Length: 336
Image 1 (cartoon, rainbow, N blue to C red):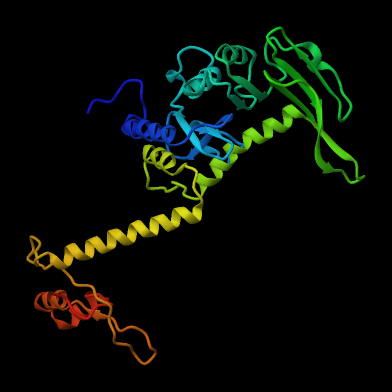
Image 2 (image 1 turned 60 degrees about the horizontal axis):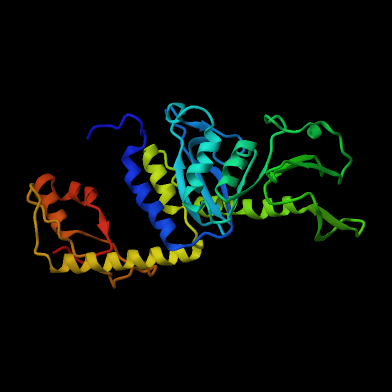
């Protein structure tokens, strides 16, 4: 198979595309959808290995994904190095690609300061989609208000002719935000401070925190079934991450897994019991009948016995003394 020039994970590309198609077919997205990156841990030699210090796994393959509030993942995109990007604007391109199936429906995209920008907000508004996100104070075409010093609890903002609002709020530190659907009104959170005074926050902050929680929940669910194994190739890890990164409780997942494994086990037992005795190229029988032994020793432990067939072959080859050492004992009464 010829390796595609511009696809470094072509070995699992078909699998990812099929899974994403299934993701989007079984659930209708809610109003708020968040976009962020996740890391598939990998510390081997890899040209597009990433380092993100704020992640639990700091080194690995970076995946961009779009999730809704309940943690359900609707789409996944991989980052395979700079030569995969057509020109500038990686952040804007990633958001538009992941949100493309959900545009023109009045939904709201939630992003962090890596993605949020004025050109992205304008592009989403053209497609009847809102944007909420934290904002870097050094972004281009940002008003001078970001240089204003504020007292704790104060907020200041500006709105352009397209209805895009940028705001700066002083909480424990300065927080800069951008939104296409909010003003800078403060609302009561329902919580009290140590002085028993009501705590107020901007509505834009509350909606951002609620929308961004889906990414954290998605990462939490996928962490329960981590593909972190030293012996697994990096594209296998990407495939495992996509397979296991879905909205389901860990208890339910394990119950379903046990049921499937039990069904497979019963199927294998039935096949083995109906299959005639076969031999390998060395003439050794391979159809062993593993049954629960009823014999117990003086400590009430199950008695282990050697496979009669294997022991017989060993005795003929090396003698009974050496055969008794080399032939393992199993919890089976006989070998047929």
